[in-house]
Amino acid sequence: ELAQAFQRLGCAVTMVVRGERLLKREDRLAAEVIMDSLRADGVDLRLAHQAQRFVCEGHKQWLECRNKVDGSDVVLPFDRVLLALGRRANVSGFGLETLSLKIRDDGTLETDDFLATRFPHIFAVGDVTGPYQFTHAAAHQAWYAAVNALFGSFKRFPVDYRIMPRTTFTDPEVAHVGLNEQEAQQAGVAYETTCFNLAELDRAITEDAAHGYIQVLTAPGKDRILGATIVGEQAGELITEYVSAIKQGYGLNKILGTIHVYPTLSEANKYVAGEWKRNHAPQRVLSWLARFHQWSLGR
Picture 1 (cartoon, rainbow, N blue to C red):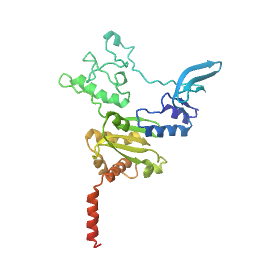
Picture 2 (picture 1 turned 90 degrees about the vertical axis):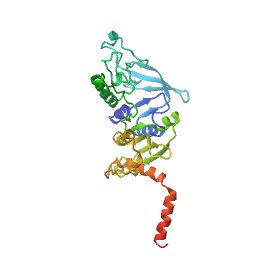
Picture 3 (picture 1 turned 180 degrees about the vertical axis):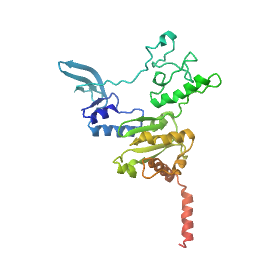
Picture 4 (picture 1 turned 60 degrees about the vertical axis):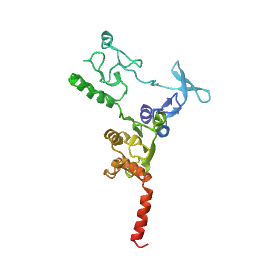
């Protein structure tokens, strides 16, 4: 996100990454779309490069790194550097040591399924306790923490993480909920995929945003949604329909039967449901109906 933003603001950005691709949690196709977009913006993307050391001599400074593919040494001069290695929970400076609250191995504050610490009247939500570092995850936790704090003596509610969407706010955006292909394969979950290319969507064409796709994973032979990935304009907005579908237990048939305003980006959700329906059309019934109509027309 920041690499693309700074590049578009006029900086010449070089992005050094240890891995072979970006967005390791997303499917390879989604990552490739984003990497192509970064390169198109002019970002110098150095994949599979291991940083070795920073060097400053006078007014010159550079990064020395090693290309993990061919083993060559690479020198990258820079004016400013952002070293982004992830985030750790801020658990110091407000008395946790005095209370002897437990810290997990990953540095987050230990809480139970109800978000309470070892003291039943002290709760924690958000990045400080994890497991997700999303603002919407913190808001989700906050409801459970507040209700459990107020009414826990009568009834407590364990926090529900089963359906947690995420969005990467690049251009195009990448939004996801449920399982993607690599997660389904790792978990041994059987699935089918249905894909719709946003290049076929009228609203995307008129807004010069006809790039990206929607991919939906369903149970084999059923319209039950296992997960959805959207790469494209306003993907973070479009994913909500699938969050609701998984949460409420309805499938692609219900989405297909729902009227979507034309011309909008949200129509893409209906069109991918239509693709699924075509792929699962009852061919024997359709063949019989075709013969019936031919007979009724006297042919």
